[in-house]
Image (cartoon, rainbow, N blue to C red; front, top):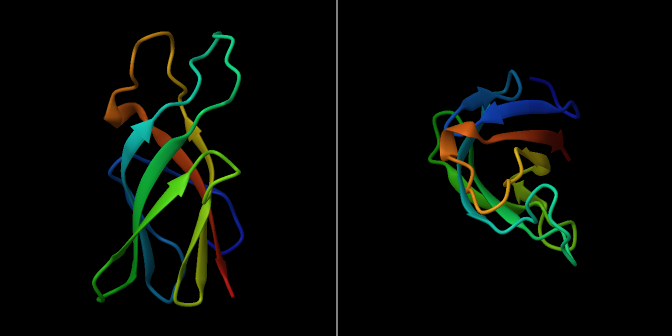
Length: 111
């Protein structure tokens, strides 16, 4: 992975973002209240994606990132900015998305 480039992680996956050893792990989706596919909703809703970020070998810091752009879609750790771009799939009807099926797109920047 490189800075400023989108990359995808599945639930539970981790990736080294740059040669300096920055690691990012998609821990889980802690809440998903997004509008189901095909339903007429007044708002898109929100999902919360929990990620851990750390430079190896330091202990990780947890960030909760939202899909709703009016909430916190990005978080800072040291000189890094982690942004959630999208979370897929969306719920369908009353069925919740099983955790192993989620995948999220992230962008990491170095400030």
